[in-house]
Image: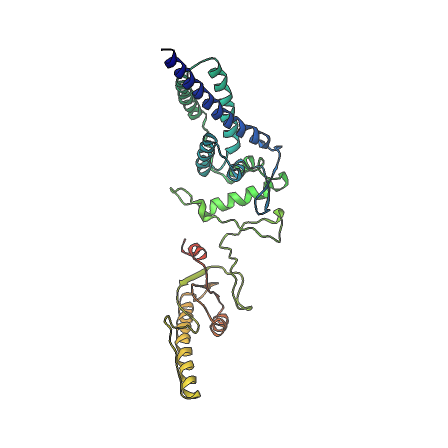
Amino acid sequence: MDQINFEQSDLSSNTTYSTFISISAAKGLQDVMKKNLGPKGAFKILVSGSGEIKITKSGNLLLKEMQIQNPIALLIAKTIYAQNFFSGDGTTSIVLLLGELFRNIENYIEKNIHPQILCEGINIAKKELENWLNSQIITPKKKKQNLIKMAKSIFKTKIKNSHVNNISKIVVDAVLTIQRQKEISDINLIEILQMEDQNDSESRFVRGIVLDHGARHPDMPKILHNVFILVCNISLEYEKSEINSNFVSTSSEKKGKLSNKERDIIDKKINKIIQLKRLICKGGNKSFLIVNQKGIDNISLDLLCREGILGLRRTKKKKRKKFRI
């Protein structure tokens, strides 16, 4: 009988020990994040294994970069990832609230209150809080100035105050551009490009598509408006056969005829593209863009350039997806 009591006591002590480890994990996350909260929060320097340096006070970025080992802390981080994906903000605040909640739970556990009772109390409090929040919801008119104010309230806790106004206007303009009536906006349609040779104050919004894959002809246009886009996968250059083969010619004339025949096939493709451009770009200020998965040789690029067509060759799948959207 004494042995059974000893085992039960040992089991209880192990359970209590694991409970306090879980509480310590949540409190540890709170201690790391609490100095980042608010407009005057401290920035942290993150150094990766390859030596890359990041300066930020974004709670979401800090959680992603931290190497979390404790399963409870990892569960908290993954839950906050999901919340941040839908709302886009509140990461640091949730970590602080959870940390404080676990601190209070620790006090009650030290008073020998069973965790099941605490869970029931938390569920009751959650329902009361949800009812109270629903009564506090305000739906202001969806004016641009109201959206800019909302954006400022978010960015003031994440970036320098000198950049808040510019970035807030950029974000609001981007969201309003992709907005469709009675549909949820897909934020994946908004792309952020980092320009290494410019600073934060030069950030700007481009109502269109920005490509880092330029044309291979110096005289092709760099900026296009009212564009018709042709996404294709055709070879506009001399192409090697897909199997190992050799073409043997007995004279230079036959070799020249073979080369001319190949050139004629490519020129026919180019002429059809030019005819299509002339057909759909009649009148008005209209442009034409070719996004080709395969290559375009220099002669073809020159022919396209004379027609004012911008041709991109050997484009990657990721870039072609932009045009399909």
